[in-house]
Length: 589
Image 1 (cartoon, rainbow, N blue to C red):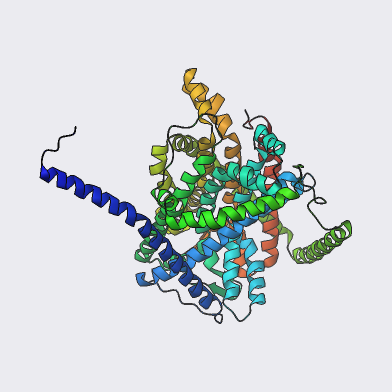
Image 2: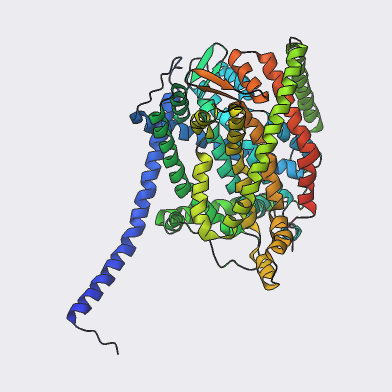
């Protein structure tokens, strides 16, 4: 029998139990109120954005550098980034799925992805922005959609490569199990393919969003020939502050961006990483897991449970039953069985596309005729200079991102500290820090060239780091325990477990980092500071200069040369390594 020390202790015990009981009853209500508040805030944001976008176009937007304008600018930029990301995610899943399962289209689609990745954002800028403004000549939505599509071009390709690589590396036994149980394509997508690709998708989404922040300054404020396009946002705020040399304003802008990144990490990425840990492919459960207080709170919310029980689960069951009734066990993409259009319709679409490509090619050739031989040779020399800078940046990035990424991926405690720091560092645009870097290096001989390499490094190293982290987290725990059981030395562990395990992710990171470095060259080699233009000789400098001056023939030729160089590198180096990762280093039991 338990003896209480006295009435006082007894009363305190009862009071503590009563408080705990009240807390258990009120906490779900507080969570529901929080969810309702988030819903109302989202509704207000949608109304605010719709009102601004449907207003008349604003030809001359004045960017205020007052700190009080930052909350409004940050909100506008976050909406553009979010819409561009969801557009990128939908594109990546659809494009990667078709490319992975269509033998007829795979080579063509991957080649197209290589080309699209190699085209810099500024090369998309004239066509995208002029087209959007022409579609909505009197509304602000035209310029807004143009900026969103430009941000999309800096995010989509990396996520698409990640999803494609994950589908190609699905273990054979999982694929056979899905076929044996007669999964419909919908069930395969939701219960096998997306879960298996979840870790890579989330980490590559993080680095893609970071890449979007990198190019935000170029997408919200730019000059196109005689026209000056400006959108109120955090990117235009930072670019205006950098061009005027207003360092207090730059610090305010960077601090605001860091605050956004920290909130995004805690409210979005950290819960998603903790949630994706359940999809790790392993036969021995890991002893340590990534945790998120927000995810735990949402999972125990009454409103969340009710929505899941009454809406999401019944809807999933209806969808599964519908597709199960008409399912087919064929895994390979089959256009005929999927209700694809007839051969006649496909032929008509193919002819229309061919005519469109032919028409564009004729006009492009006509535009290139005005390029002189000396200009062509100058572009080739610039391409060689940029090629050297890109490879130096990739080597420097690999030297530190591989060991650091493996350490973060293997240690959840370290990941809880290092991942937010890496996310913040990756999301702060290097272009915002570039003026400080330039002031420190421009006095030295070759300072602008060295600064260009450092800016490429700051903009592309995260592609490698985040892919290596995802690869290290995806290595099954049982493989690591076997290596420990057999007392592998550190070198043996790296050669037999770590490097083979992260190899597919590493190649994806290097491939996308290479394209990202070429893209970053347009900012790294040509920069405005204190109303003057600082530049170093290279292909990126020629693209930026041609965009500013409206010389579209030089812009087209420089873009073609950049695309050819990136595609050639992909074909000679990255594609063979990628095929090796699909065969020799594919994870299977």
